[in-house]
Amino acid sequence: MSVRVLGSPDKLADEIINKIRSEIETKMNEALIAAKQIVEKAYEEARRKLEEELNHALRDAREKASSFSAKWEVEHRKRLAEIKAKAVDEVLQEALSKLRSFVGEEAYIEFLARMLNDAFSKLPEDIKEIEIVPVNGDTEYVSKALRKVEKPKGIKATVAEEPVDGLGGFIVRARGGGLTLNYSLDVVLAPVIEKARTVILETLLGKEGA
Image (cartoon, rainbow, N blue to C red; front, side):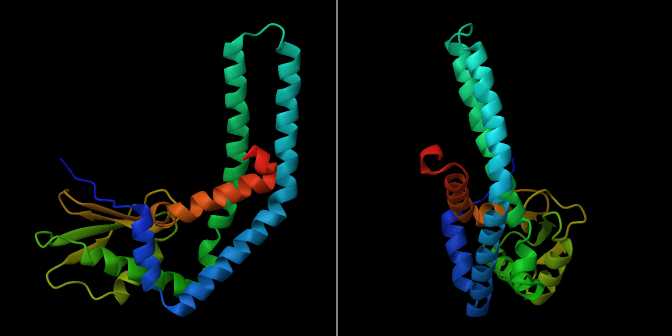
């Protein structure tokens, strides 16, 4: 049976961020500022779409309130929650999808290289061959990052041809199974993403709707 080694997203994010040089940190800050601008631009349209769906759901609720039981009320609340989540995800995905262009290609490749170095440092001594599986859109960047990294002696590393879905980054797998290290941005940036999700929800609906 394969053992999946993921670690704490919070601890992993801290380890990676502490290794990024000051100029990359500056560009990451610029990326966050740019992402905020995207949220602001998408605000009106997202609010309009959300209000239309909410108003429709509320009208429907008033029309059927007299004939539906508590079970319908539960389903209605579930639908409203789904509408909120959809609106938030649309704004968040738009911002994160532009992360590479905000940071800059060289800085992004350097960021991937530092994550690769971290992955190599975590490999058990008995693992000699690994496959690096890039996330969609990052195959070229991961290949360039691998060329920047000095691999441990005796380790053979190849980049997989078939990527996986996600925001960016890569996954390291030992040949033959037994080890998986997840360096996808979905995992590495999980704390940041959750914080952004809260901020966006408050922006779209107000604090009372978060």
